[in-house]
Image (cartoon, rainbow, N blue to C red):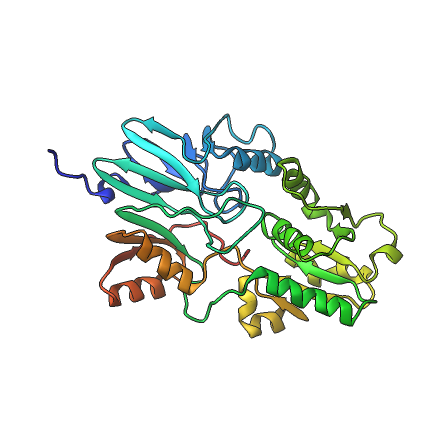
Length: 338
């Protein structure tokens, strides 16, 4: 029997990003390439201009909404669990639990398995398929919140804080800053699950993606564009918006609003104060420190590669417990958008 071929001989960082040499494709490349496998629809992972894209059907739909129907020359949708072979490399997509359609890329070649997890979380999210643990030889992970201080709260508890604030100050509109793809729709769904059934209003920047979630059978209830709505109807209600809108002229149309921000970064009080956030909501679509460490252990990976985030802290920790790890330092990843 032939000896296994070390993963680092066939999967490695190249000029455009993480490259699978025998398959001749990139995973989440940061510039246009001939063949790309895309883990999910966030703009630091999914870019336009590739000749051929393979992803889940949901990620393909997200890319077309964000970048246009012709953002790639060709698309191939792959369902979770389906397997294809590309020049001897078997490729499978497994749920990542990050946002709708997000996937881990499972690669088998030369007797070794690598899992490229993309961005992922272990917490419950009613708007996407839960993370699926896949045993592997090399686990390639993010490290967005890879510091012991980061311990995310259950989303339902943070939404309870939101609803309590609304009950305490029923005349004030609550503006919720949330990343427009994934976080916004997740917050709406969790708010609905908590029993809030009134209309939820949306900044124009999040309307199309929210409509896409509804078209893909994610039930979000009565959601409406804030543009053109009667100010009397909005008063005391909920308005979803991009985080950047909380401090710009757009927010001044609301009389004395409560500004909230849903993000894992709200664990750091200084960030909330810096942004002028009155109601920080610690809701993240990434793993926190305990989940990250537990996930790495559960994969049984002999080696861990870190793509972006607090890679130095994670690599140091893994070395201290006797696990082989290294930072890939891939360019083009935006950890602040969360």
